[in-house]
Length: 180
Image 1 (cartoon, rainbow, N blue to C red):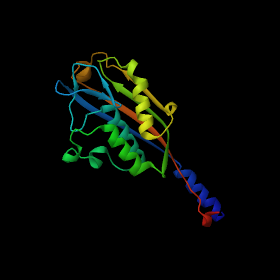
Image 2: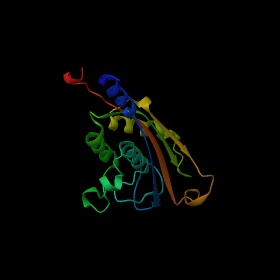
Image 3: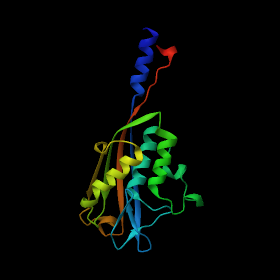
Image 4: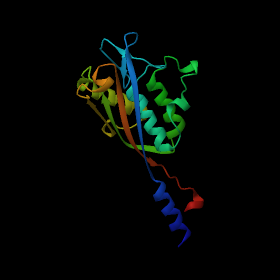
């Protein structure tokens, strides 16, 4: 096999990466509810070291998983006071700059928020726009869904919420003159 064909085969094999992320937070009356960077009116917020944006945390873990870079607890540890009260969208922007720019492009991002309350349908578009803007992608590459657990478990008992994300990345290959 020619060297060019071998290199092309390797590029093809490493071209796409998929990652999934999941995050859970319990409710607290002592904070605001932030999801996808949007403040959502609700009697409870989520408890966490940062703003506890469960949606954005799941997205970050999905991206890190696709890249084989661990999880957000390793990149933004809750033992570091620098991240106390941090806006998760800012952390996502940092992650994008550090790990994605110039290396990988987001093909699509699909997220599910799992909560009994509040109802989130009217906020999904704004959350998606915030994520797309922060990630530097078109809005149509982000899909956000919301569901309940039909009253089952800690989420069904309105003690907290969760989010799950799946992301597809494509490697940006640049050819230098020596590759041509």
